[in-house]
Length: 126
Image 1 (tube, helix red, strand yellow):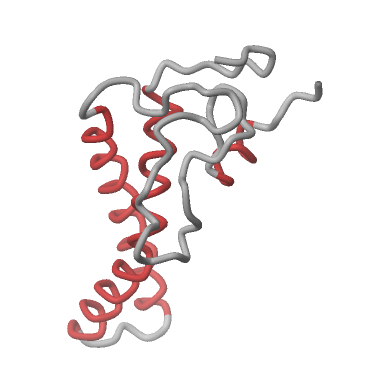
Image 2 (cartoon, helix red, strand yellow; image 1 turned 45 degrees about the vertical axis):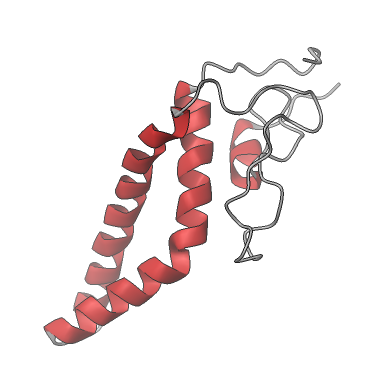
């Protein structure tokens, strides 16, 4: 069996153990259910929440993503002509709201990969 790329698995939201099963039940474009996460990997059966309350720490990752987005948006606006404060604020709020589903998902994905203690093992099923 060919080894799956870590970056590809992260970007696609795959299970950290088998890198094949989806971590989330619905696509991020389904705005009413984008936050629903599978309890276990549909491919290998690995539990995707190592302990109760595990994903509270993902808020810090999400905060980092939001801060990064604010810095990038501010730099782009500044380079485009340094508009008024209301343009900065409105643009940052609008883009933050639009990116919220992706921020939520990727903060959980990155947090699970970094701190979940789940190692890649394609041969292990459960």
